[in-house]
Image 1 (cartoon, one colour):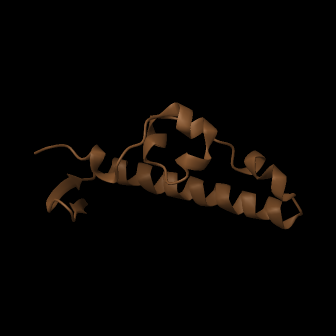
Image 2 (tube, helix red, strand yellow):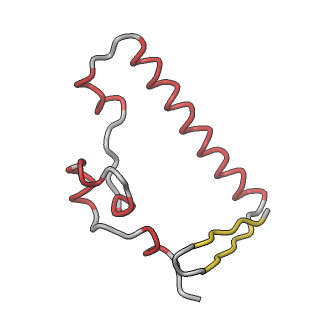
Length: 93
């Protein structure tokens, strides 16, 4: 399966062809995230108080934090990486 990223400001298009294995790996990640979200939702429905949200969604700092929209309000993410622009990850052709 082929996918493309279209970077509108520069007009650059990057393509990637997934193998069955890489596509299955990405689908598995999405399913894992959905399961974590469902578990967190259930915990909140059972009355987890608001101040304990960090226990449900603990920070997991990494170099990817530089691209995160929440970086400015996350001390761990701010310490983990410098601010990145969305297009900083694009490779030059």
